[in-house]
Amino acid sequence: MTEHMDIQDPEKFSEKDYQKFEYLLFAEDTPLEKREEIVMTLAHLPTKRAQELLKRFKESEMAEEIEWLEPAIEEGKMWTLWPKNEQEERDMMALKLYHEKNESIVELMGKCQKYEYRISQYEIERQALETLQKSELPQNRKEELRYRLMAIQDMIRMEQNKLEQCRQDIEIEEQIAQTIKKSIQTERYKNLDPRDIAGFHFDGEE
Image (cartoon, rainbow, N blue to C red; front, side, top):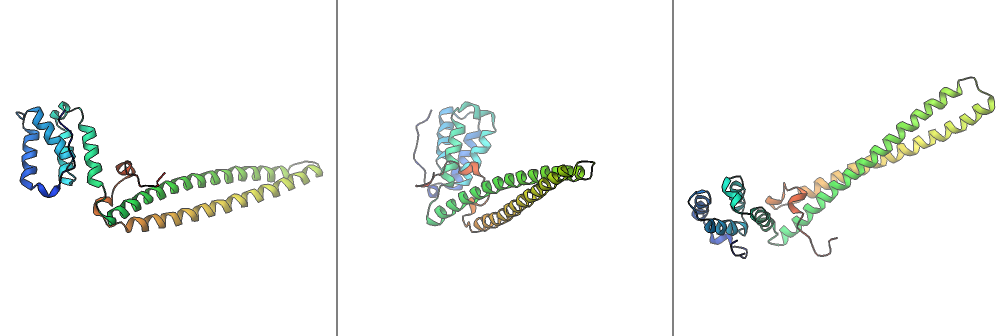
């Protein structure tokens, strides 16, 4: 394996350098040592162009010669996304919060489904109680059923209130999440999913 290197300065690489890298990466007569050196360089060159070359190379047959290609690509992606100033740091934090909000929304949707399920169960029981009340039963049994029916109706109202509150919470969380996403100015952060930023952690973050 070629020697590990520091992060490269994008300003030192021109389009001609990328074209040379591309040619040597895919040329069959390029020595393995040289190909590894290029992959290592691209993995530590925080540019979209470098990432695109690595992704293309990954799909080639020659990629199998480099066992550490996958971690190199992941490292390259991390350095490409790494915040380089205060605005980008703020936007990365906003992006993480946006994804956390989406996770909260999914959890709330699960809660709503539970409330809906309970309401459906209580409705079935309510219908059964109403049917029994109309049947031939002693008065004392019908009176007992009446109290149970009142209790079930109260339970239905309680669950309906919880459901309504849950739906309102989802609506608010969605509005907050979308507002946070719109506030992100760093272009390369705008369409990332949680897996892309899994390796980023801020001081104080759990």
